[in-house]
Length: 244
Ligand SMILES: Cc1cc2nc3c(=O)[nH]c(=O)nc-3n(C[C@H](O)[C@H](O)[C@H](O)COP(=O)(O)O)c2cc1C
Image (cartoon, rainbow, N blue to C red):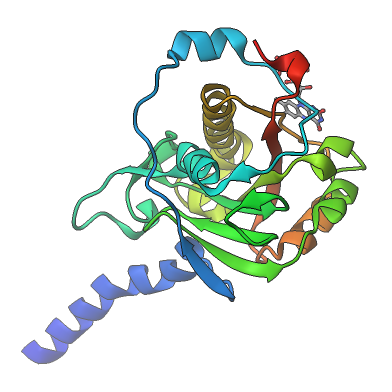
């Protein structure tokens, strides 16, 4: 009887983490995994200068961006900045560069790479744990991205775009409708603003895109059923007229 009680107790303790795993860890078939260069943690650019100069930029030069820059941008969006043993599953590896209501971290981040030095064109999925990207599909799909973004030209021109989705359930299971109506998009804004500011400090240009076809973007990226596509940020080198 004592053993049965212990067994039942163990099952009760283990049950939630098993049930959570699908929600917190997405499954994607990856062709390859690329370890990103370590992010740089200092710069000569002050936060005040970046804030005062930040603008949405919708035209870029034809030059590629580098893998180092891509690494820095993804880290700014959702990189892990603090971790320790025993954190709950929903934190997914650690606390990140962007704040998140209840540390539920509902966001997922993808990269549409077309012209990145040191990276094959394709669609990549960023995993903050380990600071890696998984290549999900090969090929330059920037014209498809532009079509999904209601033909906004700069989405097709930019050497690279960052795409956000959210798994709302990570947030709503704790906060219900308040999580759906407020917190997920607040989290998104924090992460996206980090990218705006990181672009400023790297001398790159970007512009947030909220106008796109949900179905087309979701299909293009290969998002899972539970994800909702939320934002696209094309990134490229500043043309002469934007340089200070
Ligand atoms: C939620 C959101 C959605 C946006 N969607 C688009 C978009 O689809 N296309 C676009 O060109 N700009 C888009 N923008 C950029 C705004 O047009 C831009 O931020 C605004 O004109 C202010 O300019 P600034 O960012 O240079 O200060 C979006 C901005 C936000 C915050």
